[in-house]
Length: 199
Image (tube, rainbow, N blue to C red; front, side, top):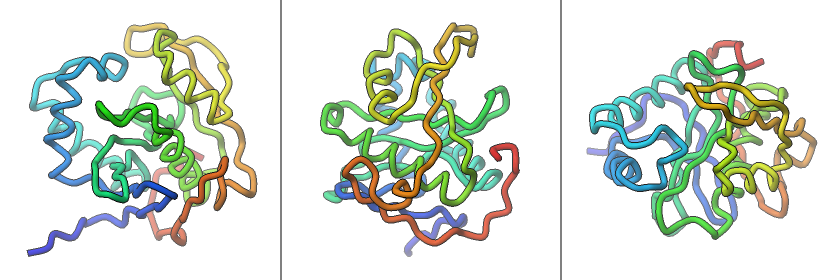
């Protein structure tokens, strides 16, 4: 029996990646990420039940807002991380966020996926530039934000830590197709009924 995801999550194709809906099968990789040092800047190690609830929360985010974290696969079928725009209770604004799993960093995947997710957000949801919350010690995320054209805007206390709020640039015409040398295929807008808090 083939399982059909119940929400209309767009599937984005880039040169090397597929950005798709979250799946139950993603849970094992999410657990491995939780148990690795790579999670230090996205909440640290949590109990297993919270990782499961995080997957469910992401599905709920898609249902409520019409956007959220994509699961990112290579065209060879490796599940390499999650990238997307989220806007949870307590967030100042919609945030473009990312995390890659061990062994997939340093290949330009995060940039390619973030460009696609950001272009999709602008094409379907809002022209307003998102932010990214970045711990000043997270040098990899800071470097990626700079490559995405984001700039530090202010400091803020977020989840009891002082972080830097980075502002992404306003969308331009080429964001819908060619972004920084990467080709992004964005499907026609879906008929979401979404909260307008991200506008």
